[in-house]
Image (spheres, rainbow, N blue to C red):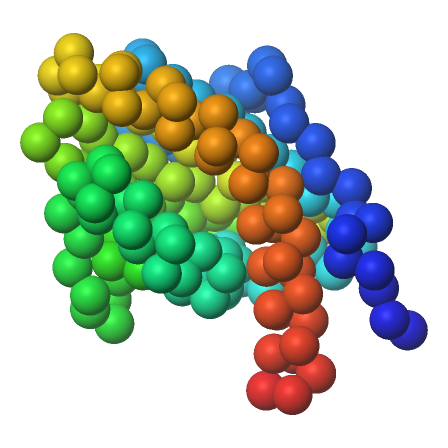
Length: 163
């Protein structure tokens, strides 16, 4: 059965649950958001598989440009990293990626439950200029996040069908 990826439900949680916030080690992040894709196929991929598909396959070069050039994140391409982000910690149903630049610290969190996949983004402003840079970029981020999750679902579905 073919699933229309654009019809998949993605919503932004404005009140981030404390159990999700606790997975980011940023004590009091200056920015945080959480987007959730509802799908019965969520647990078909591990948190790392969801993260790799999202940040390596879907975000790809556009993501690398934003992360490296606009945000100045120091990313290292290694097999043990996801799109250059350090795998900082993980549990059975979640993974936390971390990266730093000269002005900010970022955490990406992927949480996989039975019927949903959540993407959390948390940012600490290490220097005041970070707010000037991230504030307009965060608006773009919030526009792109639902499509990122939907497209990642499609990538994982195709990999499952052919891989």
